[in-house]
Amino acid sequence: MLFKHLNPFAVTAIIGVLMASSAQANIQKPITITDDRGATIQFNQQPERLAAISYLGVDIAFALGIQPVATTYMEKGREPDYLLGKTAAIQQIGQRAKPNLELLAEAKPDVIVAMRRYTAANAEAFQKIAPYIAYNMELLDESYKEVSDLATLFGKQARGEELNTAFKTHLQEFAAQAPKDKHPRFQIMWAGDTPFSFHTENTAASIVAALGGDNIMSAMTSTGKFGEEVSLETMLEKDPEVIFVYDGGTERPHENNPIWNELSAVKNHRVYYVGDHWVETNGPIAREIVLREAAHYLYPEVFPAIDVKTEAAKFMAVKDGS
Image (cartoon, rainbow, N blue to C red):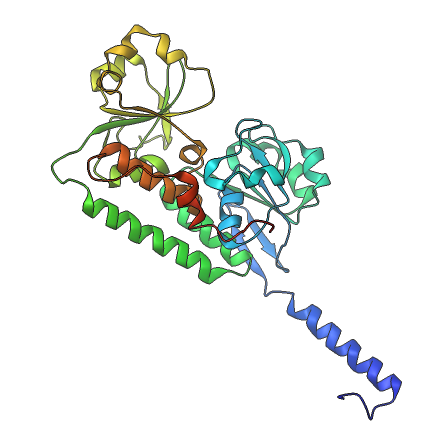
């Protein structure tokens, strides 16, 4: 036995040193993250309890093998298929645009990953609860940084690089298989009397465009906005052949406008009410599912329909019981 010939006091001292060394091993070199506010957040220890305001943090956590302690929801009681319904087991802290700070504090997170536009105005309140990272979560280019940042923060940098590299490869592979002589006009929109629609740099729109789709909303304007409202009259003029509608439930006022039924996409039954992964596309699981669904919706003769849960499980490192 290692301590056989040592007196009790020496044994106690050695055990103390070993315990101190073990604790020190859990302290990472300082990691600095610059979020989309331009704020710099430094971590001297690797966090373990992640709270997510929007599904991005949950998506990345599940792909890294981490169980979040709190999350917001898109629609109450609707657990996203692309997250395999596992959000039901996480503390719910309200709708993503109106997170409940009291419930957030009760979850005792040691890092908060949040959507900037819903939280920046209350940054001070969030920072009192835990270090707070705010991302835009809007553009495909931002997605790679978000995945890399959080993978590094949680000590899983190699996994983050793997996820980013894999998606870039899959995007190229799907694009290579897409018909080169077809460029379906498409639109991605929220339901509404004057639908809010997305420019090509938006993550979901970037994926559809990479597959050869022609976005009727074109690129971002000089204002830098990732989307804008567009009238049904303008939609008729541009006449999208495929429309993706973010499904917010039963509220579909655009369908009450007689112009809606004049659109080619409506006439040809190519309007798709898509899931939460199309709204929260910046996570590594969501963007992979959007890629596969978009390929099928654009070119059903080339790409088969998918089962969202089956595909999502391939990219999820958090297993049942985690």
